[in-house]
Image 1: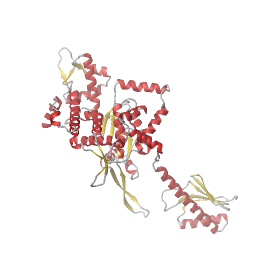
Image 2: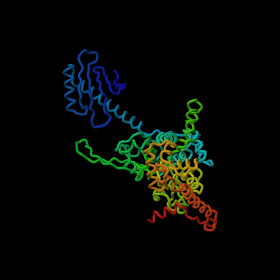
Image 3: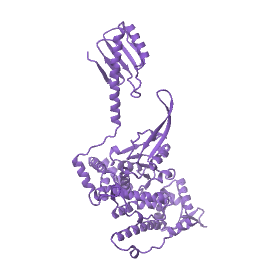
Image 4: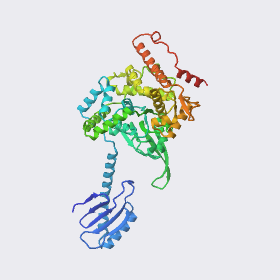
Length: 537
């Protein structure tokens, strides 16, 4: 009879020869190659004698010798026969274990799709097109992302930055049920599967037990930051330092306690969703904040799409093809150094809070757009260092300004996103009704808000001196009025003006003109004067 280990069931490994049948009950552990603990069942072929069952380490000579003598006495055969059979079994188990370990390691490796020549050429041709961002945004919409034209493209460019040494991060904010997770999930599907990791919940130490380079240059998609609250500190360190280290105490094979280092390296691109803006402020400071469109128009778009999907009018196969195509375009992007010759001439609006970190985000986002346009940029070589790089163009800066206008506006606003939405809806209502004052109950009924939520908004607006109580002898209820109806428009104008001024100056310099005589000096807005007063005090 040919010697062979039967591995049809991993919990019952059977080895047979002409005389004996040896069964390994429960299989063997793959961890710890220095031992082979197993439960054996030994019985004679075609015999009515009861089998021998025993638990032992096949690498332990003392245990093995006792077991051989016990089997020899039970079956009334020589010890040499049983010893040879156990030796053959041990050889087969060693081969089996090494094969299983190798197969397990192969399964853990990310599966990289190898593009054929046609797919590479198609992706490169697309990346060389004019109006690349516009065409990309159109494809994102056709892939199943409804509305959110600016947010979806912004998120896609941020996910593209994962291949760079300084990746960007994004947090989606909005009320419950507005589609934050859906937007993140659908845009995430446009990134190759080997480059993204979707997580629902994270324990405090979970990040430390990834392989050292398992997260490198990947997009980490966290469905809800509430589910990762315990892991936010290592996540922040991974974002900032691109490396986290943890020490643990463990015992070696001799039973001695030793210190073991768990190291996980980045860089990583992190995306998450939440309704709680202030709770995750430390993480938000490291990320771009995008506020979802909660307008009635966006509701109609989504509901119309849902009806079409239910009616079978949406071509899901075409959506899948577009997803795979955009994944291929991501695969052909190669890491390359970006240099911004206009960096020294770029300025942020003075109204932006935390300008140091925001300025770095602004510059990195411009470089991310250049990185996405790498097939349209000429490659240069540094004569001193030999480094290969491409340069930022004025078109990249203009595209970045258009996409980041809302982000910078929100970062300049002292109100939270939900409170700002409430105030703007309040302004629209008063303008429609041609009223100047209002009661809390009136607005609560109109906007369908809980009383506690409105009270929280009014406290924030009162602290910012954007609303005030009005005395009214004819009414017992408190009435309120807005102190400045145009403060948000002034802030928006100020930000747009600063960005446009910088871009215009650089265009004039690039064309050989003088920026002083062409760009007029702008007087400060009311909001700027207010900010200067606050900073002075």
